[in-house]
Length: 112
Length: 115
Image 1 (cartoon, rainbow over the protein chains, first blue to last red):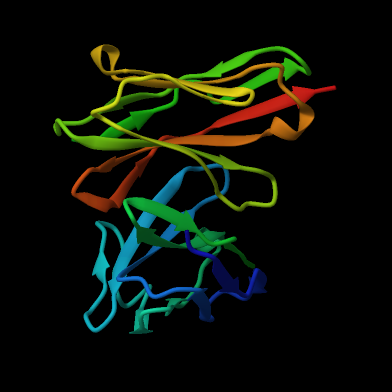
Image 2 (tube, each protein chain N blue to C red; image 1 turned 90 degrees about the vertical axis):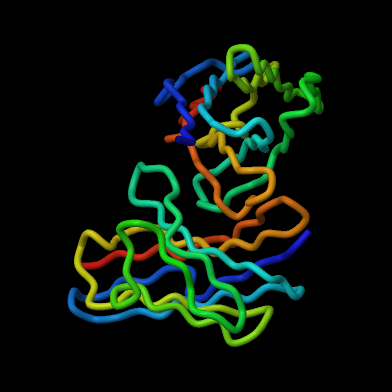
């Protein structure tokens, strides 16, 4: 299994600003994933982050809006840029190990 | 295309009632994984079960049981003698067996268990 922590746990931000969310895993993992869960909705994969390469984004998500860093095998960041109220969501970090995915506690973002 | 459907948006039961959450999936793959996750109000996703497409045996874990039927592409989840602590949103998900990083989540079923 894997234990995942995220910072911050929640934040309230002004529109037009950016927020960087950190994800830390207690073991080395090859793949890390970022999901978005809009209010009352299901989870949508934003991108897959492999260490040493550029993140792979899903349809509808672009690097300029959601830049991702993956400097090592235990850490990743997701930045939500130029935020608007539509970005208000829970952002979850996830790692894949042994054909399972473990999810972090999430970052609850509110954009005003 | 891969798709997971949870037709029940919200279910309300009284404590000690049994409740079944439905999950129907679509996939072009012959091998795949199915999952159930629980999301309590705190927001964290809690892993409940993984089932691979090779194994159609039903599984029981305490008050939880799962019925996997490939013939109907269903993976239903039953809670026996529900408790207030079972109140949460439950997600069914599908992943490809050899590309497990790609999860397809259903829309979730919100379960309300009233005392």
